[in-house]
Amino acid sequence: MNAKSKGKKKEFHVIGMWIESAKNHFWWSIHSSQNSLDLYERFTSMVHHCVDKHSWPGNTHFVKCQHDKLTDTEIRATKWIKIGSTAHAVMRKFLLSANLRKDLLQIGNSIHTTGLEVYHNVISKYLPKLYHFEFDHMEIGTILAALDNNENTERKQKTTITRKKGGLTVRKHFTVAYRKPMHKFIARKFYDKKKYDYLKDMLKESRRRGMIGEKIMLPTKRKLIAPRERDRNDLIAKSLKFSRF
Image 1 (cartoon, rainbow, N blue to C red):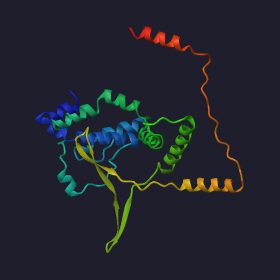
Image 2: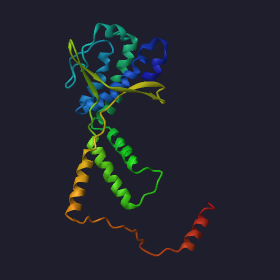
Image 3: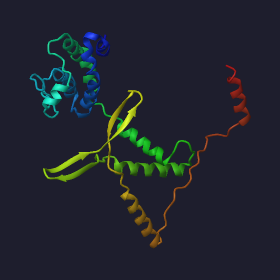
């Protein structure tokens, strides 16, 4: 029985309250770890954190939590698992199991595909899948998508700085979205607007070339040439023959 199933039982209800935090901690561990052992130590540190223990000996890479010091209000509002309780024993058994350790040590060098998925979305902006494009259009659209993505791939989260009597206050911007698979609202970072300064450079260069009369070599259309002639009637006959099976 896994931790999620245990969390549904009444006596282990407190475990169920930590499952969502465990998911977030898992992704953070993958994103911030330096190697496989570091990943394992970061993720299994939840054994200590869930009992309100934020530093521990014995590890090589990760020996304390990296979050800010919890306030008294945060400590009182958190449903901590009692150290040495049956629920804590179940958490330890799951997080420190040999199978989980083996799996974590194998994915230490994994990378997130978020950047690639964002790039694919940018390509869809320039080359919508609802339309058919010729080769030249596909090539130029892909180049524009790559320029757009590379220029804006490291945008920072939008912040607002206000000056008050006590000093400067920095407010980070978020947007709220509803996740259907999770059936709940989540907060996402709101990033600065995209920049397209590279388009101005492209226009300036095009104007410069036009003024000096420089010819721009346009790509020639490429045709796909089959290695031999086709027999239309023969292909149709074969298609009808195999469609019966």
